[in-house]
Length: 603
Image (cartoon, rainbow, N blue to C red):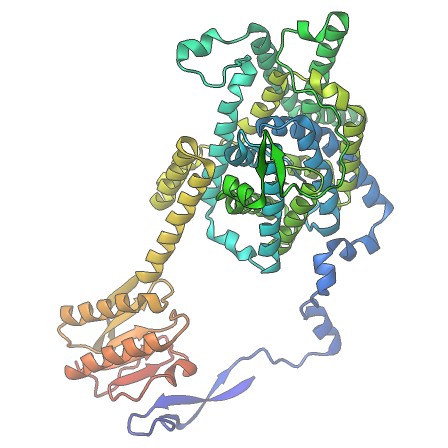
């Protein structure tokens, strides 16, 4: 316990002596300097921060305690995730306008790099619908080399954000904007894939009549059948048995594996059907739109193409930057937003190192660009599969990467047999459950500002582009923050203490220097309302970053009140803040919840 003298203000004293002990009274304040024995101190002392090397190369923090049980759990999770990520990567590459192998390059390198630097076992770095849409947005009808350079530049921006500890930036993007952005992206993916699902081969559909007249029956049948099958297989994981026996437990596990492998099963069997069809007749005779032929798909290490030739045109680095435009910054920001959101959803102790996740994502994209990969980030669907598979550490990514490499080395010649309709079905079934319209009703009832922010972001994503929708949500959020800082809520009431009255001014939100004019206006309005008949008590407990602006405002208020002989009492102002204020004859201080008015106070 610490004994502190109760200080009071004496206006007649000089600047340095104006705070004096009052009548020798002593006040007792509890402090945290409690004498503890060694055992108690070690039990309740905060944990030592890990060495920076362990925090950055995160595998060093857990590999020393890695045991057989963890390895077995990660092996199962890694294989399961591999069966999920292969068909997704092929489909997302197709969505981005690329051939199949580029999606698998991204899945392979992202999974392995994350093992060494990632902090969340459930996060799976690879192609996503979000990154595919962003890539298509900025790289449509451009050479594939532009996509690879985009991956490098996005990784570089993400890496710099991580090095500069900018993880807090994500906190400025509110949840409604994130939900609107995710839902808008899912709707775009769903709509874009309708043409592939129905076999419409026109690049632009002039009218609704042309749309329906160009539907190919074979592709439409294949696509719709695949969607129905995917949605049916998804329900297998929810099957419940009346009796819980060893047999039903094994059967439930089998159904769960079939359910999470549904994408791989649909792509495999649809491709197998086309392969057998082509063997009996010819590939040209197959009545389905098929994926592009891949000549060689084994990854090779090479520098990103900062200069290249394409169709008799030479591209240099400045040309590529001009082609990408704002995508150089928007793609990494969106990737970071998605990745940190996933990490927050699966972090165990609530302590997420967002800057480390940025750094890791940057390394994944930079390394991926050396293997001709497209931009990547985490995906909620894959993270959910990892969680359900019992993943224990990021080591599962090694097994996932090896499975993807095996697919690249063995299955490359067979990619051309995969129907576009089945890939479209995989994408549409995946994003269908990402479309969340529940915030419309919830936000309308709870917060109109968030409601209009969600509606605006969602509509702009659909009508213009996903990055403009996100930018709109961020701008609206920042404007609301600035308005809140400039217009703090102030409560003004007339209170009675014993037989005396006083005007009580209490901020209901934190007051920064941007809000002092609002506070001053409220005090002036209160004085006009009550005709300067009562002392003014200002609660200072929510004054934040007390500086010269606060001092200037309070002295101006004190000067105005002094002209009408009104006392200004500053309640719960810290001693440090009090010492910043010059001497004023009509200023008093009060550190109690119950205000004691001086006898000479005007009534």
